[in-house]
Amino acid sequence: MYDLIVIGGGPAGLTSTMYAIRKRLNVLLVSKDLGGKTNYRLALPWVEDYKVIRGLEVVNKFQSELEYLKFARVLQTVERLEQRPDGFAVLTGEGDELLSRAIIVATGTRQKLLHVPGEKEFMMCGLCYSATNYAPLFIDRKAIVVGDGILALRSTAELATVARHVHLVDLGAQAHLLPLGKKLKEANNVTILEGYQVVQVKGNRYAECLEVRAPDGHQEEIETDGIFVEMNLIPNSKMVRGLVELDEQGRIKVDCLSRTSVPGVFAAGDVTDIYAEQVLVAVGEGAKAALSAYDYLLPML
Image (tube, rainbow, N blue to C red; front, side, top):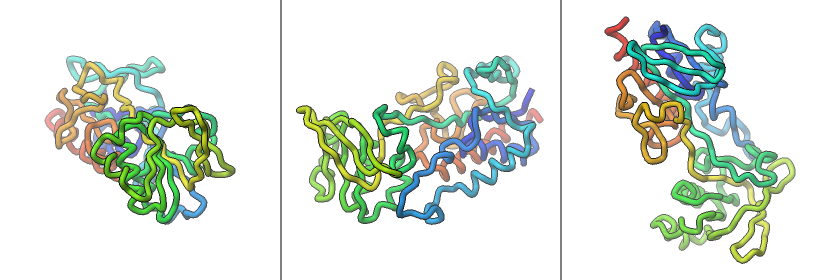
């Protein structure tokens, strides 16, 4: 029986695990990989890596420490979390049953993909899924945002503050009806393509062009310095569905102490209903969840 099991190897999970180790808890990290979304970095031809603040120094330090502490990690996929009389059971895809007094769920989210030719080829080479992280790099550049909701509108608005021009490919043809959409429609450096569909991503080493199809069927190509796919994020919360309370988007509801609706189960990072999907935010939330779990466990130690 472990004191604490952390599910998820991204920024929040790595931070939680290292904090728990330093609190001398008997902790185990269970994840299919280490690093999470920090394994994906957008490459742009005019940007040198040192100019981008990503929080990688903190995450990489924790990751390297955990890779050395092999006893504290298991590289497996978690299928389900069950409550037991004396704690919780983590059931993995490999058939293991891992028991713990407390749990931190830090499984993050995954992106909706376009599933069009060129998307995989240029992923993180001029095409990515987080304009919030990279918008400051597009000063006086051309950008394209593809999406169908408030996430796409927010990304377009942020890029428009610095970019020369931003095209929003509005897949749902309804985002422009929202207040932010109406404001963007009046912006001189924003073009909203309502109801257009993406046909193909084109380029050489980097994504340089997006081929789109209009509602009337005609196709055109839009040249760009970068493409951002901004559709709804899908929380990786399936393993706790039916156990803890989720919001309408499937994110785990937590309070200010990272506690879920079930005592002993904590959650951190993008899988929760906190504000902003940022690496440094996830690092902070991971630390908070570990400290909160420690307070919960202290009477049992």
